[in-house]
Length: 294
Image (cartoon, rainbow, N blue to C red; front, side, top):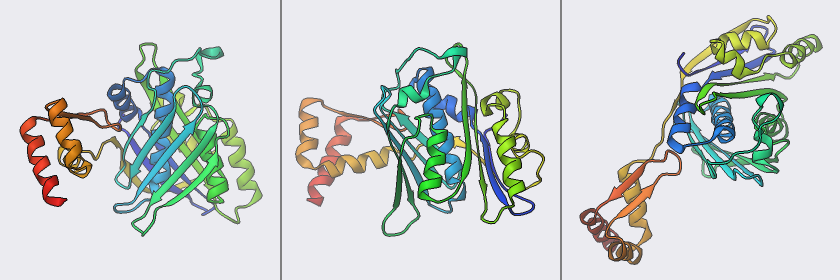
């Protein structure tokens, strides 16, 4: 099943939903960063959350999630755009903790206590950043807290990643349900009951349910009108040319030092794990460009 996201509203206009299956892109992130199971789950949930929160982006808009916890996996950074492209990394990909009863991955313990920052770059003079303290480190609860505190939007958030015994990502997905102001008490009660009884999203994805069917499970039979269906992918915006520009910005002295001590430059992108190599002739051309700009 392909990775994609759907955005819809209840036919009565009382709520909206965002749902996504992200198995393939989370598996790609696992391979790129060589993450271990608990780290794969934490990063996968964060990648999915970034895509769900970014579902209302337009054009060149970007959203960035920064999760700074005091747990052993360190920081998690995720960036998503309006085209359904996401990239991200975790500071300590080789983090492992003893699994809880039933094999549940201890994501909350791995993340720890700290702060979630959500930055939206909407093409204005300054990006907008909201922040909340982490509720549990489980990512889903923390995203719900951010939506309530920073955007005053009560939301139910479900995120899940199922990691296979061999360490590969077997299933991944997520869901956000938000009530519009003025929703009747009966709608609220029905949604709360249905969502509280919802099978874990990762289990639903593993069963082969697409986002639309996950939504149907979550909203308890209420009708949904879908507005958009967006294919999703793990995609980094780094390029050899962009990395070259960064090297130019380092200045003549630093580039000269790299040439003398190493003979070439190897720059690894944190987001995608790709290594860009600049041999001596290319570094010399970059040095020349830097000297012309100084």
